[in-house]
Image (cartoon, rainbow, N blue to C red; front, side, top):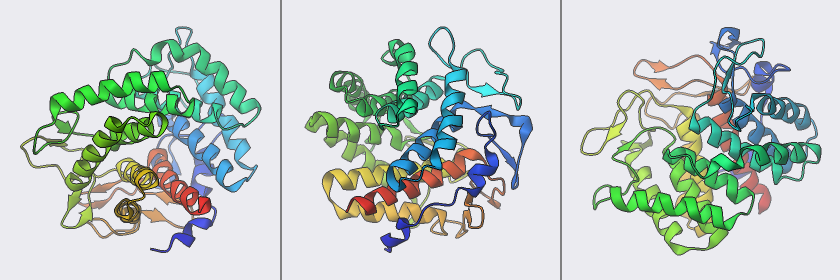
Length: 340
């Protein structure tokens, strides 16, 4: 495990290619940004976290150019009701009335991260937007949305709101889990590690042991369920994994692999149990051939990540979500190494 590798700055060439003055383009056709799909707030929120985290770790002021663009997209997407548009066309015109609750949660997380990052005018702008959307944050029901918002309130050091939502996750876990199924729902679907990650953060802020116990139990269960013949294997999108049934192996998405890296590193940071550091590295190497197809997911010249693993091999498109998931995993390892 060569952790010195993460001392190098990551490669943002592909991210730069996807970025216009409006925001981050969602999709590509092979290597080339595909303008017909326009922009999404999900990807701009992820990109905002990536570039803010990059600046905090490497102190490279080139990050400010990107932070400005992605934060401006989030500001423009804000509606009068305190929700957000999600999708815009290539010219920046919003084409939906209201985005999903998950997109609200990811945006809340991104804004809270920047608000807490002491980035001058960027942090102030993030705080201003948060003041207009906070009224909705405790009312949204989907578990992944709740999880993103927990992480947001963790960034804002709001113990009471973190506890309020974390208790709801604990209740869901207690109702759903059984001896052979330590999970919050009756199926494993997308971004599964988000719930575990949120409870690890809830424990770190409040020190309530029940959050750590459920975070560890659920994450250990997820880790075992997300393995195939000794290899990391994200739950496939073509069928997911319902309780009592076989899990789908395909299509495997980079966003799930990246989330497993970040959550494993958080578990290691909290528990100091090196099994989680090994787990994080194994999942990071999913991007570098440690997957059931034995394929390299990263195109090294541009720093781009392929869009997933299908039954026929790699999806050769290189969209924003996949590349951002890889960059987030890389930066979380960089943060660990540079903290030591």
